[in-house]
Image 1 (cartoon, rainbow, N blue to C red):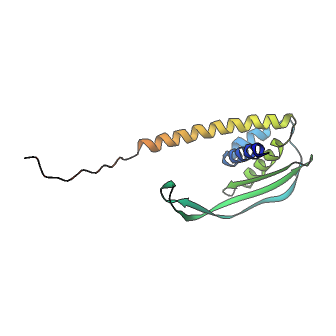
Image 2: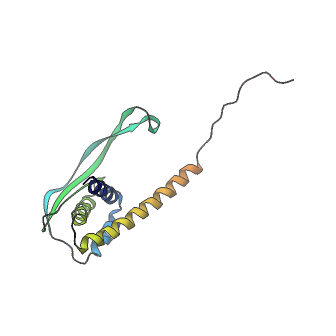
Image 3: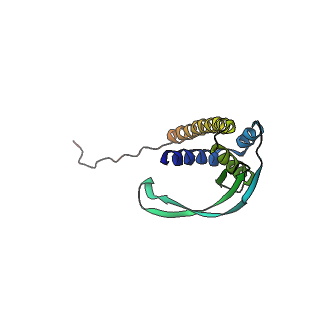
Length: 151
């Protein structure tokens, strides 16, 4: 059971970070586009983002960001949810539908899983490029010990 929860958390994270045009392309490439009912239409609000000083220190309130959430139910009863940063309601809708599809056992789930895997690889590549770019600008500070000149 825990493995399933972790798998779902991973694909929901990938869907949330995917670009909307990638999700649109995946939607267009589905063999059959599923019918769904809204449990919660896309709605946008604010969430508080917390950070840690130095990445490991004490928590502090960094600020607020916009987030869009959505919930759908497919005709087969599977329920999908999405929470995405920003105000893109279409992104939240597609992510929720794909979340519901991925919980199924039919061929559409394996097709969507293939797309999600591709999205994850693309996201890792973009993250690596950003990381390298940031590392190239890193400044190394050092302290010199003060002492008496050896003269």
